[in-house]
Image 1 (tube, rainbow, N blue to C red):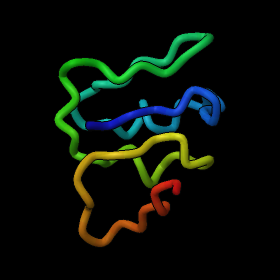
Image 2 (image 1 turned 90 degrees about the horizontal axis):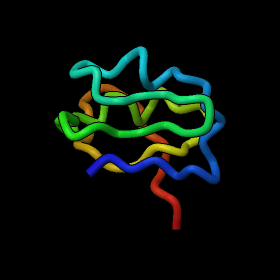
Image 3 (image 1 turned 135 degrees about the vertical axis):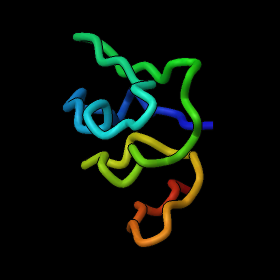
Image 4 (image 1 turned 90 degrees about the vertical axis):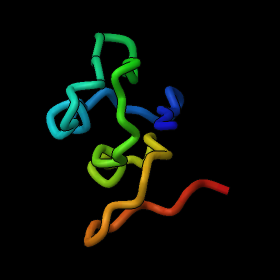
Length: 68
């Protein structure tokens, strides 16, 4: 499951632009993961603040460590 930490998310929208199934929606106040999310994890390494977690690891892509 891909999850967004709203306390960390800065609403930059980088993840929305790289999401292959177009499963993220950015509003003025929050980032939503939509039901058509395939949990590919493509969005995770693009988050500059590490607010997105989960999904499958992507070979050849560096991911931020999961928070403790």
